[in-house]
Image (cartoon, rainbow over all chains, first blue to last red; front, side, top):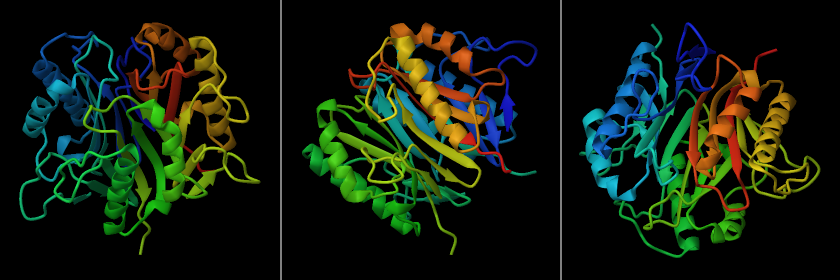
Length: 125
Length: 125
Length: 125
């Protein structure tokens, strides 16, 4: 198992790895609207969505893969009023053929509008 | 990776694939009480449960597998008052030995009573 | 696929297996604060957290693996007020390098403060 570390030179500020790899699968932790230090950046739904997905994409790219290799997405949209915006924005980052997906509402603390995690394939070199 | 398409002849009405396959695992998207066009069919809890699980079963069968090959279920029961009905109905579709399972409550929009997703094995031919 | 059974000598009280194994991956069902018979033990957040994680650890050990082989955690913390306690307690059971993780709030019935599930590697002998 490979662990991608939050802070390769010291202890992790929060007790999770951004991602782990087993065989040809990468499991990416729930990504929210956070900056490079992991601090939450409060924003509009759109701003939080973009920052979350771009954080996920950066982790995938560091591991040698990308959004087009995602097998399965779980998305968490706190306020169901944002579901149609969510689907619009989603199509900017994901294209046919799409990953499998489950979208839940609620289930996030008030400090977040959005969170996303995934399982993706890491192509063998 | 294999993607099962919502609409093999044109764009997907919603940005997800019903399922994706990697190696011998299939990842099925959250299935709700929807008709063949993906439109939500509002119903009783029981009606929504049956339509959701039957949608999942149809996708599994199209991929050459079935409910008895499911490894892991996530179920979303919006109203906890339906949890005992849920467990009763569940035993009509799944038999010993059961898949692993997590059941969450809330976390669905008001338009749905139930949703379910899974990871299953696709037996090699 | 291997299924770990709740009750190897008779029918399962609830329709799920504690865990299933496919290849070198084990999928553990949502673990809550339950006793050896699966009955819920109401407790403080800390008590429920410990009982849940210890149930998960016991299942992993029965399958020949352990918490340090966990690839991905999903945690469900009903009351977001417990999130900082949760992260403190979590560090008692998990150490660097950590699993990938997603933490959701709400999404549990009133009878539970906490639930946790995982995917882990089962080392080949």
